[in-house]
Image (cartoon, rainbow, N blue to C red):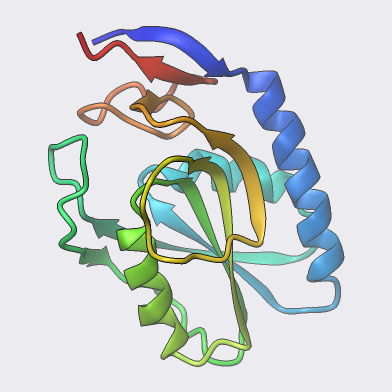
Length: 173
């Protein structure tokens, strides 16, 4: 298990999160913002993104699974940890590390919409190109990346390599 090459540097990630944070700060000024991180991968993205949002923000987390131990989604989504907070009437921003197949996120967005938030938007550090997925409107996008398995900055391989400060491409050989 090794990283073949660095795809996105730590410096580029920080610059992009600063840009996204400035946009979120402007868009949610004067609103009651709840940032919801999708565990486990989004914890690093959400922590660093939140540091660039210059507003009072509340946090909550959800854990969902569609991968199991595989590197490809199973298409079956399970909520492992639901929100602690009620979101009715709240401005909710879902924070994701990566949008791949979009199946898990599509399910999650549908699940949260029925809870009547004032608004429900999506922020993702990575969007994988060349993937057939349900339509998802990503309000705050970081980087578009090519197909391939990536690790680091919250993304794992067998629960390892999340702690890398950059996004790397796995050597699957």
